[in-house]
Length: 572
Ligand code: GLY
Image (cartoon, rainbow, N blue to C red):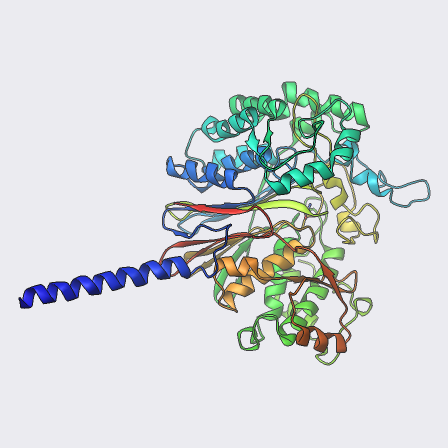
């Protein structure tokens, strides 16, 4: 009898424990929303599109590692997320193995050999805006396929063809577009029609609607060539010829030699610490890594946790840090293969401290009084980011881009992929803003074979030798501040990954001298207090589309898929 009661009690206790654990696992992620599907032990992919996330998880389930999954997701996004997923663009990968080895891969586009610094200026020396944004001349030499081949050769486990095959099928069989995609394709119909007089799969006679099948057979043929021939299937032969024919049709300058000569480059990662977390991120030609580390160092001495999320002190400090960091970006950052970027100097503790010493809590600084520091020598925004972790704990953060939404708007005839408009990320004319309002100087002037400066900030955080967070986002100039805020949201403000990603954001970039704020990001008390000190706020739509993964202390992966898009965390 006693034994039965004990057993009953034990049973009840186990049941309660089970309920508590289940409730915890369901709820620890905070408000999960439609974009997030919970917490998982074996691996996770968070990307801008559910189909692509699922392709990645299928690869993980087949025994592929995080890099295998990343290659498959990159190609899948090129099909199912054509506004930024790409084979005609470029990007950056940050890698951290389960054992803590780190590496970064630069597959950023390059200026063609025939490019020159004044190629987008009129006879009076003024920028002709559309010239670096639309059409064949706006395109840099694509890097994505070379990047995926490099990543796979170094770290991949599964066969190359198995990673590309899902995208061949997706392109040939088609996929159902979302309401958001239907509306984008309808909105861009005129541009696509003008830029693609021979027709493209992205245009149809009637209006696109949610659930319509988008079939891209020309892209399917290119994907098949990549599946069978790897790098040569894209940079040589039929596809290279199609690119050159496309260039000739619209006044572009990419040649067969440009394509054949393109190389992705392994670069030494930037590494720093923030409140005891190891931060690994991308070096130049991304400005994002340096800027992120400068921002974290700028705010680290202050008690953000005590002040709280988006209070006036927190927001003011972050704005002033951003003002100084973006002023540095404009002057000091460019392709390190062409310009001596003072990487160590910009990230030095003493330098960051000196930069922050000049601000006044009583009154907003003005961007006119802030310029780049003297450093000791040493979109429409569209890009997309995905985060992946595998069963062993290997982690990949990839941010990849065509630059503007649907890049240059040109789909290479017979090859089916969109050209990037990444040339606009150069400083077309020193001091003149690009499409993100960013200004730059000599460091980022156009030169043949040079990589244009980027803001993409894929990053991985670790704690005590163990993976902690994988994070990144699209958003042009707002990429850096969105990644910065997401990290603070988790580390300083104790948010779950999903809540950190969903939290409203603000952004300042030195010039223009105002602060862009998502609707309702700041409460009226905070904004009134800051306005009284001279801060100017400009309301705007979505800032960033962060896709991130957090490893909880219980060893589960918690996804943060941005509700601003169709993004989706899929785990297993
Ligand atoms: N095209 C956006 C960036 O690379 O920052």
